[in-house]
Length: 151
Image 1 (cartoon, rainbow, N blue to C red):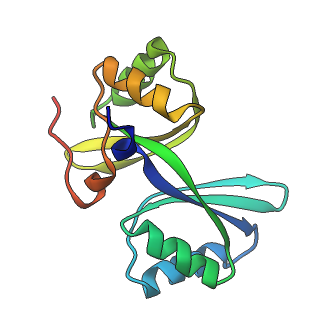
Image 2 (image 1 turned 30 degrees about the vertical axis):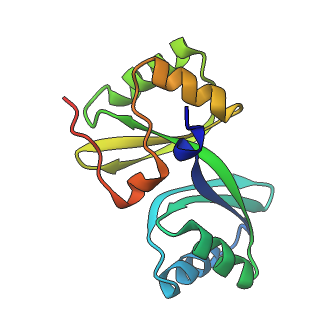
């Protein structure tokens, strides 16, 4: 099985928690024609971690570093879920039964489906368990494509 196609590059940007930091990051993206597709912010003792999925991760990584940001890649999984009440429950219940522990996650809507971005401890084992339980993982090319329609 080709696990590499399911490893989605997420940018983790470490930034001081102060006014203007998110705008500065977003300006770098805008100035380099990079589209932000998914987004999360977590706080910690004066610093935050901004996690983003973008359409051009390598360009975004290089430009953010050039602008002085501390940034790294993290492999995450993008799991399609039904865009209806209970869609998140159905997916996370299945992940629980499959033995997949979510370290963190965030979602976004991408009609006709929704997508849950998750970080798991063992990415390859997570891929195998998720696929074995019938869920659809989006491959890294998805972010220029579309989701399949779900009931």
